[in-house]
Image 1: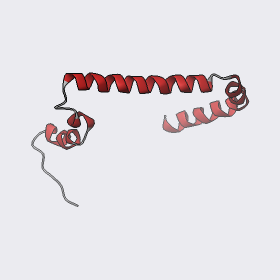
Image 2: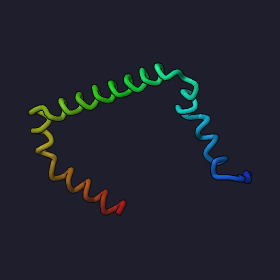
Image 3: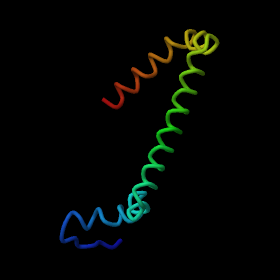
Length: 83
């Protein structure tokens, strides 16, 4: 295994930034960035509304009501495990 000497913390972060979405849109025009932001906001909003409608239906609520006690125990177990 090989190691690399870093002269600053920025050197450690730079390769990550070069492969990120931030690097891909660094040179993009403000209009393009605005459209990208609007697109992402819209997609996330549609997904969240879809999940809320599906999980808020009477059928889903009835199903969750049957498993709620076990779901609560399971989530509590994970909290204890990770705590």
